[in-house]
Each structure stands twice: as C-alpha cells, then as structure tokens.
Image 1 (tube, rainbow, N blue to C red):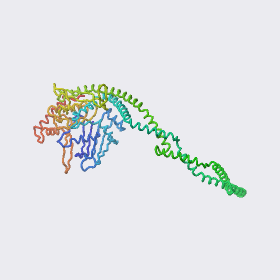
Image 2: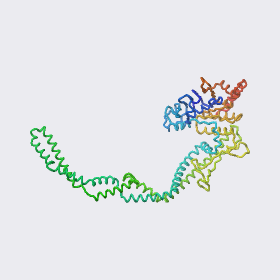
Image 3: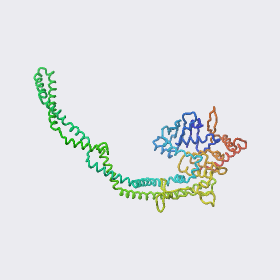
Image 4: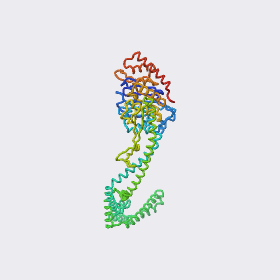
Length: 578
C-alpha cells in the first residue's frame, strides 16, 4: 500500500507530506482547493506525462516522492527484477520524480535512475487512477473489447497471444505477396537491365585484384627503355674496374697489413669483405633483372585496353574489381528471383493461404473464449450493480464479427482482421424490466455510467492486484441512495486494495476510514495548498460544511455527527469481505 506521499513545489502546493493507511480514504475540500493536484502527483509517480507548467511559479523544480509497502510475491517485485532494479521485498519501495523548468524529468526507484518507460511499467503495477471523465470511455464501443480482454486476461490472454503471433506472420506474408504483385512492370524492366549488366560483366572475365596488377605492369612497360639503360649502366659500373675489382684490390691491400695492427685494421677488413660480398650479390641480381626487362609495345597496348575496359566498368558498377564482382553476385541473385517470380508468387500465395487458415482458427478460438468471458463479466457486473441501486439492470456483452467490405473473405463473409482479432464487442444494457437491450452509450445517464465504471473497477481490482485505486469524483451525477450505495461499494472495495476518493458528497465521505481536508490559503501574497488529516471532530465540521455550505449551524453539525455514527454502524454490519 501507499504509506507516505511528499510533494514539493507542484502547482499551488509548496510543501506537503501526507501519511496514509490501509482502507478507504476520502479527499475533500472546496472546489479549486487543489484536491486533483494530489492525484496528479500520484499520476506522475506512476509514470504519467509531465510538463514544466506543473512547477510552482518562481521555482526551479518540482519534487514528488512516494513510499510503498508491498507484500512479498506481489507482481511489482517480478517487474522490478525484470527491469534490473535491485530491491528487497522486506524493504520499502521508494519512487521519486523531479520535474525541471526545461520540461525534463528525473525518476528514481529505490535510488536507482530509471527512464519513463520503466517507471510507467512499475507504476502500472502500483496505482490505478480513475479520472473524472474516464467513465465516458464506456460510451465508446471500441473500448469495450479492451475492457473484456482485461477482465478475462487469464483465459483470453494465452489465446490472444497465439492469435497475435500468427497474425503477425500472416500480415508479413500478405505484405510480401502484395509487394511482389505490385512490382510486376518494374520487375520486367529490372530484369532486362540486369541481364545486360550480367552479360557485360561476365564478358569482361574479371579476376579479383586484376586492376592493381595491370596498373603495376603498365608502369613497368611504359618505362622499360629507361629501366634498361639504368640497370645496364649500374651493372657495368659495378662489374668494371671501378666497381668490384677496385673493392677487391682495396681489400687485398688492407689484408696484407692487417697483421701489424689487428685491433685497428681487422674490423675494417671484415667490413670490406661484407661490402664486397653484398656488392657482388647485387651485381649478379642486376644482371639477372636486366635479362628480364621486357620492352613490348604490343603488350603495353593490350594492358592499356584492358585497364580502359575495367575503368568503364568501375564507373558503372563499383570503384574496384572486387565491388564489381560483388555487384555481379547481387544482381545474379535478384535476376534469379525475378526470373522465378511466378513460382515465388505461387509459393507466397500458398504460404499466405496456409497462414490465413491458422490465423482464422486462432481468431475463432479467441471469439469463443471471449464469449465465455463476456457472459461471466455480464453476470458479475449485474451482481455489482445490484449493490449500486441498479438491481433491475440487465447487461449483455455482445460479441459480433468485425465485418468490412474491404476485409478478408472467410466463410462467405468479409472480415476486418487486426491485432485484437476479428471481433467487435459492445455493452448492451436494459436499465428497466421490459425494455430491450440497447447500446450503453445511447441510454445510460451520467450517474449510471459512473456506477457502471465503479462496478467494473471493483471486478478488475480482484484480478489485477493493484494496491492503490484512486477515484476522482466517481460519484458525479448521483445523489441520495445511489450515492450511499457508491460509498458502501468503495468501502467494501478497500478490503482488496487501498482506495482513495475525491468527493463532494457527504454520503461518500462519512463512509471513509480516513478523511483528508484539502485547503487553499494565501500567505505573504502567495497561494498554497495544505493537506490536513482530520480527527473525528474535524470530520464532523467538514461533513457539516459539505452538508450546509458556508453556514455551519448546530443542526448541520448534529446531522454530520449522526451521519458518521450511522456510517460506523453501517461499516460494522457491512464488514469488508475477507
């Protein structure tokens, strides 16, 4: 459950620290006092969208921190572990969020930085907020399927997952088939171009690295005459009297006298010997190299022509022979695909048809389990509505095929498939005996919609294990006995989770276990909101204000105390279910 909430510099709230408890909580106060800011803060803690406009005027940032106490085994611990957030179930769970004036926010869970997606995933396991206008979603038939799937998640979920996996494969095959069909004309144009390119590249007979080797050969052939003159001249110099012969004579003379000063002359002798042998080896290599120099104008012309051919191919297909050959392999593969297009079309069509059978089998399974859950949901909602002064109401969840003239033909119908299946769901209601079932959005009043949504929230709370359930004026549009029934329903609901309700109705407020007064004050020219946990005396005064408005008389105070006494008696005889 939510244990504490701290807010700093959020809208008109300068500094608020609130302690909460188990059970049913009511937030009351004048219109505009800032009750919704408390809900906004919890929404931000749960990963809701932020805005720099929420920061109190003149402040650099807004801060919110919530401390939760969660039992071991709650789904939130598994979510935290999956996200890589280390927490011990024996410890409190602390979520902190800061907003700055640049519109950015920073979030931490037990001190560890998390992004907004991670915060939202954790927040969904902790807090469920029912806004003032959320019951309007019941008027939109397109939202009814989602509500049904949420209710029957344990049964519908696995079947829906299998359907969605098959649907994804079917859509992929369908898109590939359509793309292949639509590309026919372009495919034939490409095929002609690819065939010409393949023929041109194949005729060239390229080999990897050929252009580099030919370039080197061209350089040598172009300068063969100069190379011959230089190599021959160098050989003549080394092999003549001023070359090896001169070095040999010099070596002989030094050797003759080396015995007179071996320490000084012997190293020189060794150097000369080494130099002589190296010069001798280089001379022989020059002689051999001279014999290999080719002066061949015909071969040079062949090399030039070959390089010109490769240069032309490089301009068209790649900057090197390797890239040209890679391109050749690529278009060979694409040409093979295009030449076998009809065969591929038939194969894809057969695969698509096979996947269609699978996806429609799953869609039918999904419809079947939805119809089962629809009957169960309708029965449970009717049961909940009896507690909310709508005991004569009949509800049905109608499941029908989602037909579409442009959809997929199946068993004589054209159906629109989506990731949600091939079904439409709509809540039909008959508020009074003898009246036909009609769409909920066409006949339900605001008060009836509020009670319908509360009934569903009560049912969902038993399934999703979310510990904090918040209602922002769920009692809008109701009064009298209906308001009392809503109060009793909220009280009973607080047995499975911590319930918070913003209300202006004393019938609801008096059934709370804990009541908080939200007030707005002006201090030093600045408006600020304060939150006060009310004692019994404070609750009497607040209930009297809710009953009588500005003027609080002894009669209204007496009436308020009487309401609290009756509520305590009601709660004592209407214990929360275990």
